[in-house]
Amino acid sequence: MAFQLKVNGQAHAVDAADDTPLLWVLRGNLGLTGTKFGCGIAQCGACTVFLDGKPLRSCSLPVAAVGEAEITTIEGLSGRESEAVQRAWVARDVPQCGYCQSGQVMSAVALLKAIKKPSDRDIDRAMNGNLCRCATYVRIRAAIHDAARALEG
Amino acid sequence: MLPVLEDTKGQQALPSVVAANALRPVTAFAVIADDRARAIALFQEAGKVIAHPLCMNCHPAGDSPTQTERMQPHLPLVVRGADGHGAPGMMCATCHHAANYDIAGVPGHADWHLAPQSMGWQGRSLPQICEQIKDRARNGGRDMAALVQHMAEDSLVGWAWSPGAGRAPAPGTQAEFGALVRAWAAAGGDCPPP
Image (tube, rainbow over all chains, first blue to last red; front, top):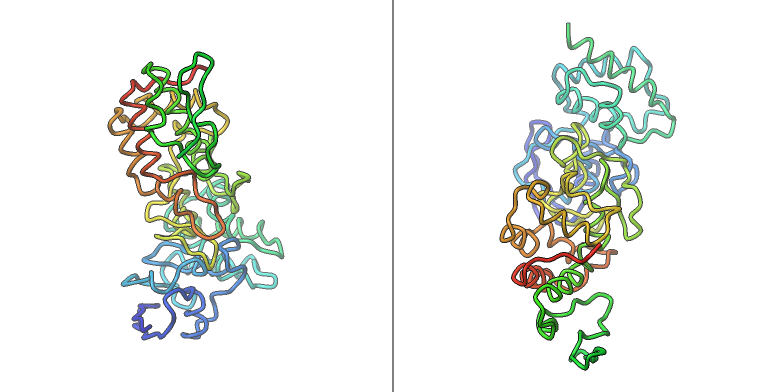
């Protein structure tokens, strides 16, 4: 079936079965491979994208359910929070293998859009669905605090 | 036709054998003449649904839901947040979308959320839950009619009978459950003794 998707500000015509996970369409049809496949069952967060600005696991949404919503992937992430997070990530050398990090960055940006100065508890609650097998959690938390401070200035 | 036993006074009593995934119909309770006794029996029957893990999982006593028929801690370890829809950055809707998505094994509903903490059922007995759901200070201000409507018609309650692949539905149907709750209210809404 043909779908018109709005991804990163651009319209895309996609031909896919109704129940295809959005993640597969992003990666397979549109070549946006920054969004990762981790578990396929909404347990790891590697596939996190934004749907109308809200974080969403793209492995657990069929493409037919996207409708008119605007999708933002790691490739299209922009804005103050995104820039602050990316700078903090680089400064802290947050990634190790890096596989989960696009999902981590998406969730961190979503958190900072919702809570300007998150506590450790806020961070844990927002980020505990994003798994990291390299266990970079301590650096992730520190980098989110750094980004929040940078956004205050 | 369900088998009917006689009680010790020679009166007809309730059918004793019902499939585990079925509910006795309201008509089966008509043999109980006393309103209070009938109300209690009706609520105990409805309790098969209320106490079912599919319902209990999102009526936690604490801040986090459970999942599966074994009522394991929800993974990821989500919290209810300010309004039962999750914490900023990790809302229920981050993973649960408008409909069940069997490919990912993720259940869905357009308003997937936890019951308020005042409606936490886990760890409570059926009599305690009965008193709790009638208490307007704890049930969101619902009178009996609104309570019956919620049980009988709310589509998130109804998810328990359409839970998606790999999950056994709650006993009976929502219509049968709603009829039991309606009959319970009509009989006076008494609760089982503690």
